[in-house]
Length: 298
Image (cartoon, rainbow, N blue to C red):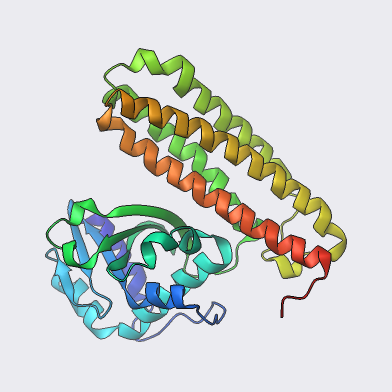
């Protein structure tokens, strides 16, 4: 019950209030649809507590204290949805990347809130078909994740640090799960698992050094004289991420051919997170090219 209790204790700080420390954004039709179908999921031990966009309990048996908070704090929960969506708009390309799923009339959006510390959360995002939500909940599709600090919307280094820091954590999980889940661990250790670990270490080391030169929280704050150099760094990091993702995809294909099904799903999620990082770097590079070119799109 610890995770849900910690989440509730943080949420109580906002009782009868709403988050207001995020920029207003005019939503496109895609973002409007995500907002309209936004479901919250909270974890209680092994139970997943699922709430509809109107905060009706759809799944699980929450403690009465959590239900009381949800019933009395629609204003806060609405603002939390906007905080999350606006964070994804500014510091990721997750929504755009998954438009194939999210635009589907039957698709809905699920945010699993995982407490970390202080006012920080990890949010894992899924999509599912409305008609199949309750009958086959475990079949939902993972579309990515984000790391949130409810006390601070803006992120240094254009929000890039989270992508590269998380690679280290994910590699540790991949290596550990591989030892326990792979039937033929030795066959994959040297050609794939060791190489993934090496590529991640090199990528993270290089990335953390390069992003130090642009500590700004958003593109508008970057002086025009620095844009070209920063764009060069962004494109370099993009190439590193593409190389890592392509190698991961090769490993994933190999695993599927040999039916290593107990492990391959973890690698699929890792690959999905890499693709999200690639899309975000491309999004940044397009915005930088436009600023450098001084070409007005309005």
